[in-house]
Length: 346
Image (cartoon, rainbow, N blue to C red; front, side, top):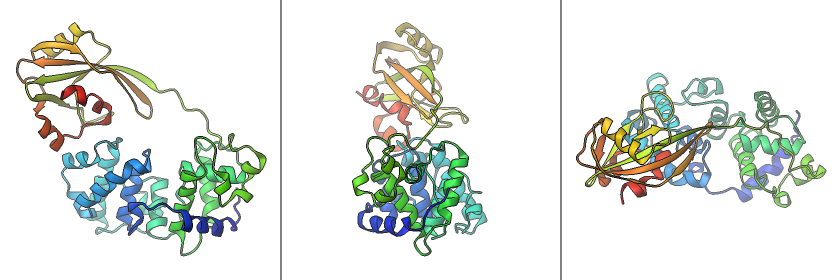
């Protein structure tokens, strides 16, 4: 794959005139860029803004992130999902403080040694925060370059990503590497759209775009279909005792490792089965009633969940019983269970 240098000034001029105002673009230090890029993985920009500003207000430095209590970190991350990202942030922060003197390494190779940092994030930090000619190739960039060049290479393949990175690296503009990286992302997010018609009439590369010229923007990029997700059926048990509700800590390994959850069981239990299970857990239910249903989609799994609300005689079992105010202050509950909170606290 070969890219012409003429695309660079066209894109930068468009970016200068049209870039969005985003909190992480102010003062793009390596720390601020890194946190924003980790938050933005598999999450929409608009959903991240408030989380980012709250996170930065409480943890403005590497040192503060390295020292934060795990429960507080999870609470700050609550609702963003993919909680291993937050754990890796803290691991990497501690590594940077202890092994790099509180400074980010200034090479892509060394950035890749940090927990949770892959090719894309390393490129983003190196180019945006350090002005190095290191591409950050995500889905937006792959789509933009595929359409520009008319490439029908499968963008899900690492080889395609490597080819795009190599071609981009050759045309990075000295002194504006960070702007070029962000301009590529911005074009893909706001103009060369992933779903629906791309906005070709306002694209800075419209006259150079092969897919537009050939009328095949709906066919490019090419991506092999994903494997079907595994579907798990679960029953969520909303245990209340007066003003208190029960929460349980998940195992330290596997999906949502170490997170708090609402008590639950595999399979679709009946009302009687739910009551019997709670009794086995050491909690006597006085009343059991069917409650809300929900579906939660992970990257490779789906949870199809039914729930029962159980009024209990007294707190018991291997649970943490909390009032609503304590829960909201202390517990980070994964999104998979948050659809049940209205029923839990009613």
